[in-house]
Length: 260
Image (cartoon, rainbow, N blue to C red; front, side, top):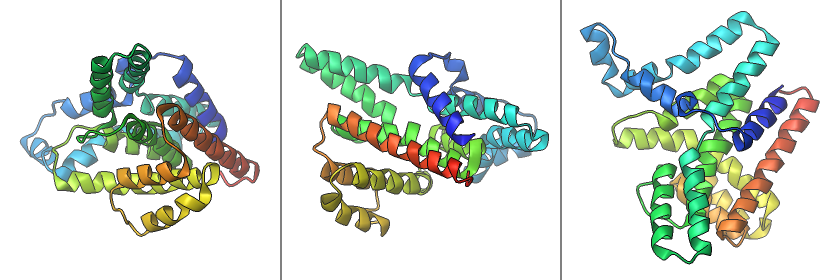
């Protein structure tokens, strides 16, 4: 079932434009802004832990209902819908299309503007080349969601998407949270780069990243990718597609073996 859910959700994301009200980010932001009665509860929601616990309630509720009903068809449909809502990145997709159009028209000012929009869509504060931003967007919006879905079901995927998208203060604690939740997807995604790219050149950097050197997931991702392939915007897109197909095949093998 996991394989069918992944194929259905990711195929629909490319072909179906769903309303913004059904994007998981929009759902979570509305949930966070929902006013509740009780001064104690409202005060509890202001703390970092309270914010997290409150924000993940929708994801946990969905998982609880699916476990309670234990219906295969319902689980399949809700899982596909949940994945589809979690992987939406329309701003990034639109900005990249306009970036390529501006590049073909040799419009440097428009390219710079769209690159800035891509940076915002990626969640990065620092400027970076378009190839690096594409890698980071793919990791956060597509690959990591799939990994947590395979490991923890739709609840895991939605909890990850919640922590990725929820509104929070820009404190060092939150940077640590994002470092933790992106650590495993980053190492698995870069492992795939070894297998579909230049293995011998990228292997030493990948092994170092297992020991958290560099500690920053973004740097670890881009360093391995640069060694695995000669990065340009088109080759980056091809690299992440090959990597994604590799993991789809891996999920298929796990499904055939009865492990998922």
